[in-house]
View 1 (cartoon, rainbow, N blue to C red):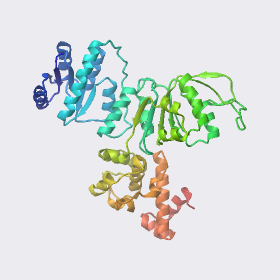
View 2: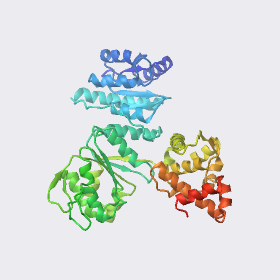
View 3: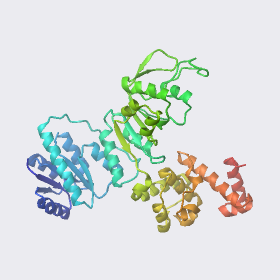
Length: 452
């Protein structure tokens, strides 16, 4: 098989550099300066792979990739960009890109990707495949362009349109629900419901009813018929958060749903058949739970068809600036405070901290800083004392559990006021002065937050 590679990039310097690298490693190289020219050359040259830049005049790489797929071409396409984002990464992978490389390009990554592409091209030449349907993907809810997050976006792009059950694993606060939401929104089920349930927040005696519904009179308090989450999610996706907290009884019933795609409501005899994509998440070590007899091994293998492992925030520190920027913009708008970001010194502290509470803790700290700020830039003084010393986590802040920005703001306000009251021996005048608000405003806020 020919080792011809087509390089499509609007920058001549990039084309020439890639030509030198690839020819030194035994490849033949042809090049094009835009997507339209590249499309014409693909049909004529039948390259082993295409190195395709995303941002180009006349026709960008995403549009060119879309046309390549429409034409039924089997050539592996490796996207290149200096402007990586969640949306373009997922969209590119969902449209069938073989790989996605960030500029500045690394020689070993290029050669490794081309080697794999050549193997795939040869396999495709020997085997007939049906073209999958790749609907357009739009998703901007996840933040981070680190290599580890780019790989997660690729996984989302590759598995979204399948019916495979997905298990998302990661510590608390790493964003497991966001991954589940992205899988749903980038799938053919996106027009139907995304139903979520936290298995740890509902008592065991009520969880079965929440999941599968109940008939009127099925138990004390069942005064009316109720559909469960699985029925509500029919033709859509159900997200089972903290699945490791399920009792063995509920696990057995869930196993049947996974195997047979059917169940009966609590107190009912009618068999309900469903078409639901199941995405589960846990921060527990399920393998250990299996050894301890608290989680079924057969269920584990059913839910762990595709695994997405979310890293703790400290393992992707390069994403912290983007996360901070996103959180501050949202919080500033919500709280009507024009904040432009952190000073360099404050930013450095945030980037060096280990974040045991992960993104949730980062969000809480940023909200607290915005609330405490007196100017357009957040300073070191706006950070909690424990974080300023960069020694240990500020426990009271890390334990805030609010999900929405409004809930987090209310909880942070309450904790800030309580802490200030304690430091000023509950003297309201001194506390108001310390918080830089007037006494009547402090009193009204204390009343609103249930402090008095």
